[in-house]
Amino acid sequence: MIAVGALIGAPVRYLVSRAVQSWQSTAFPWGTLTINIAASFVLGALSGADPALSAAAMGLFGVGFCGSLSTYSTFSYETMRLGQDGAHRQALANVLLSVALGVGVAALGWWLARALG
Image 1 (cartoon, helix red, strand yellow):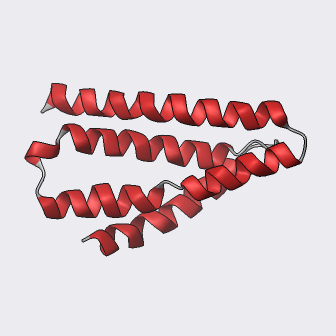
Image 2 (image 1 turned 60 degrees about the vertical axis):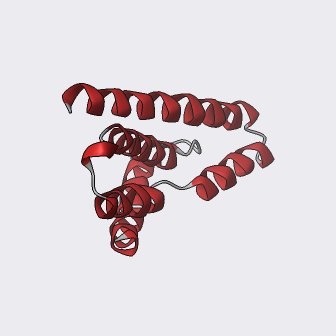
Image 3 (image 1 turned 180 degrees about the horizontal axis):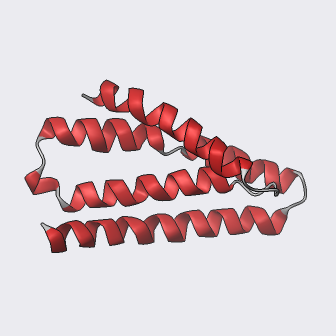
């Protein structure tokens, strides 16, 4: 189930990230930020619904899909590149936005799943 989720999540990450980034004219990694925020929300919602999900469903959607949808390595690389290119404020903004929004939307997803479940 994990492999099936990963087979879906990885191409979705690539396509959505590239699409979002193509709409922007800045070096800021909006595509990676967007996809990581989306994955955080989905994983938060899945965690909130955890008692209602089977182990197979959590493996498919939580570990497989969300795990391959989000990308810490690309986030790290893009942040490092911003710093190397002298865009220190953008690098810092990327870190702060990624952490604050990621945790925030994960909590929101968890809360919504609990409230609706």
